[in-house]
Length: 168
Image 1: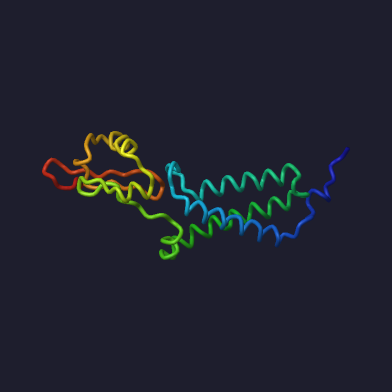
Image 2 (image 1 turned 120 degrees about the vertical axis):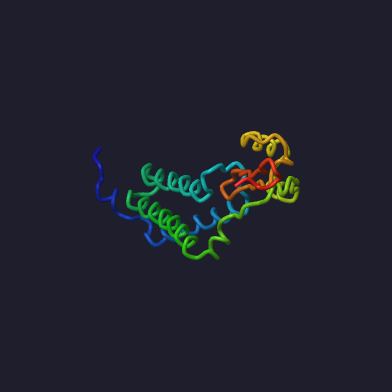
């Protein structure tokens, strides 16, 4: 049984349909992940995770034969990479788009006081927050000037110096 080179490089689905399907799925999943919050994402951005998962699936389909050709998988992967790069560029050049697509930081501690609203919004428990403070070398909430949940899902901590003023 030989390799059918013609079938490997021919399209059984319109390239425009593949581009449309890839575009729709990228935006649908990106919006759903943004609405779902940023818990347990760590320092890797949601869009990065999304891109890796979808590309893996699209490439897998192209390699395993779910598509009838490598070219179909290549068109879909190219579409997904295009949208990932386009979103990054749009967010850089147009801050209003960045505000729509990227989560803002949330205040968890302000002037040594817990900000329960921010903690509820991101489902951060007191135990989790205390654990993060310890990782930053802080043993009490009242020693914290500000603590934020950043867009990446990490918690940043700014402490007071010995005089009660914010450390530089």
